[in-house]
Image 1: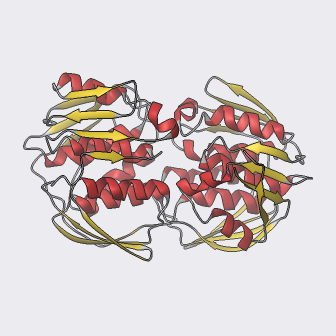
Image 2 (image 1 turned 90 degrees about the vertical axis):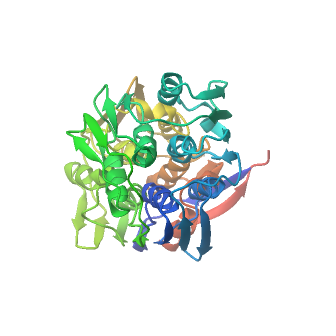
Image 3 (image 1 turned 120 degrees about the horizontal axis):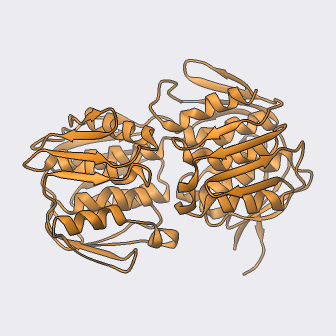
Length: 425
């Protein structure tokens, strides 16, 4: 069993923020659908990104890797190389690529591992039925699809996952006719849709939004190759920004202050909690602070809830996290996971149906916790160690490779004391 033992220490120093996983996925797909060569710079080859690279290769793209860059020779006409795509545990890969696969007319089987096998795909099932697309599934993966997606109106709930909307946005511009995506409920995770529209625009594909209630997509568009540098990831910076608040001083560099990323909300949330945070043109700095509990609406920034739970557990007073029910269908049930594991460390956390109620403490005790095979849980619990009186042992710590393979290396670089720890099977 892969585990780490972390001795409590404050963290200090400067860290270059990892490139945005969300934007990496989008740029790789857009470049693969462009006729010609695109160079994608500043890529981290996490498990999720490798899954998307392999998926687009299967769909016909020629992708070559050099250091942290990709050279992608794409094609507007997909030429299937493999009829099976293993998405590993990447929900983005699965939901983004299903509509693209339906541009080929060939039978393609999607597979995956862990929780991904059971993550919901109902919005796509409804589209398959409406458009007479053949599919077979056992309430999840493997999923086999065969048929051609056709232009028209696509009704999608806005509060399940924006990934379904993004998947359609990749494919629909390439169809012969125009289409609309019509939201039947209020859109959550609006920032992720903004990232998609902005990325497509950089590759010369236009999406029109009608106040986020519906999206109009002209057909017969063409992706154009472009060179693209991936900006730093606010969801990853959140771990280090909170680390600076809990104890030490951290400078996060290589980050776009004007980013469209929804997880940029971490900056305003830390400010509202009274944290010492300074924002400059190209860096953000946090220092040891006393923070206070607030109410946090997680509807547009669900990915930073695990690390916000840690900050709340060590803030004065009560924090309530609301509108976070979608976290129950991520890589783990993240609400249950953070409640369970933070309480093991001595926190006071209670679950609600759609969030958490957290009564803050000055210090946690430490102990042995489980990552739930979820990268964001493992990283959040690592940061919690800063304010523990005893070491923290995290089981299945290798889960960080899903999004941030160098996390523990960077943690150590900032002064953290991390030891590989074997607990046997």
